[in-house]
Length: 397
Image (tube, rainbow, N blue to C red; front, side):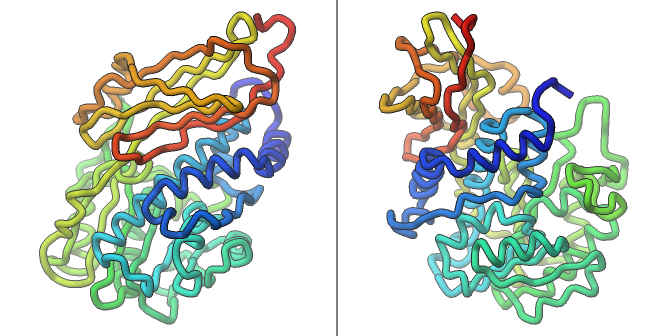
């Protein structure tokens, strides 16, 4: 583990930083840039709290050992998940506002923070196996809670839904539960409803690992140590496995669409329709939006600031720019360098040049807010990083 602050110290620091008004403004700005967020209106006020036990934030803190980096990653993924979910819902149901939507295995509400501001909360339900997480999302976001449980057959929401969204659950299930949860959740769909769930495709595995012949590799360990590894580990699957699992769970001939890397540019999203018929053709227009990461943030001679990272899009088009907000200054980066490592990770997608390595021409004072965004040509944007410049120390220059 890299040296740095202890886990409790990092968690406490992150909780303090979440109250930063400039962070709120940055997250809200990116929320409003999307179609669904814009419909909520400029007066919307996003809740910014993250529960201290939220395993998504805690995992980022553990990996990166930097509170601002972990917070940036948390909101970057949350905003992308919200945008993906809204695209799929609109493809299936148009602009309907009366949809009954269930966020199943919602955790501490990374999606619900935005959904509860973009849609009527009396049409949003949340299901979760962890009681404290369920209490948090009900209290923070005003959604209607439903207790989940380890055995799919015991889960009964007491109603049917037009949309059931399941992010990062099937990517953790063993074979038996994988099929049983498809069957159980599918049975909770209203006529014309859709079930959306994400998986890790086998292509994400390291080169020295492979999925067994049956099409699923389950390892009984995950970033959430609080859940039993026998029922919640880390799972990789083939496309053929998912298709067989769906057919065995709910029967052949159902509407089924797959969006490769649709969730956080990593997990595949499968969309299953309650109505028999062809796949959801409208999802062929799915937009990934911009994506990227700020890998290095540090001092340069003369008290200047250096930012290095990458930004691109899986939509087959070059980005418009990387936009920087450094205090009151607004800067735009429009030229990118080749990044073979990024191209290799997204093999099969033409991202073009994606790398940037930028140093300000001016000194940047301690405490200055720094916001980095990737912006597509149609105005779509991703929040790659937000933070404040730390004290570099006397030897920084």
